[in-house]
Image 1 (tube, one colour):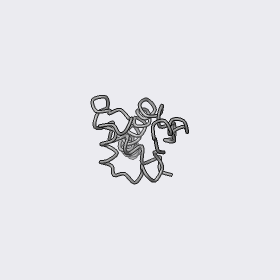
Image 2 (tube, rainbow, N blue to C red; image 1 turned 135 degrees about the horizontal axis):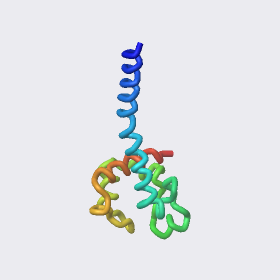
Image 3 (cartoon, one colour; image 1 turned 30 degrees about the vertical axis):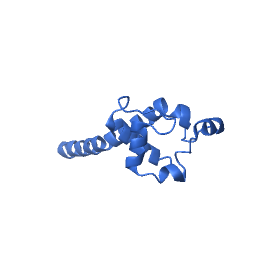
Image 4 (cartoon, one colour; image 1 turned 120 degrees about the vertical axis):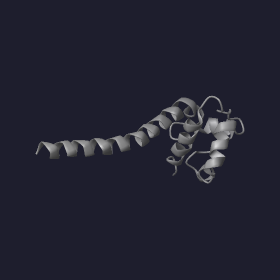
Length: 108
């Protein structure tokens, strides 16, 4: 009986351990977005009308942005695009990759 309980606890712990890194990465990307991107791109990836007009921003969940390849989004974040500043040196490659994944969750 005790052995069976220990096996269940071990299995449960293993499953939780496998699930935590993706959840942490998603949370980390959301935090990075909030800290680095939200001011211009808006909380849900939709810039305010004034910001969109002033900077030429498109909704991150819209067709134009979502049609971009992961490498194009990575390049835009890394090197900047239009009036957007580059984040190379400010964000790690892993953070940029996580942001690309996060941007994909904003798809409408």
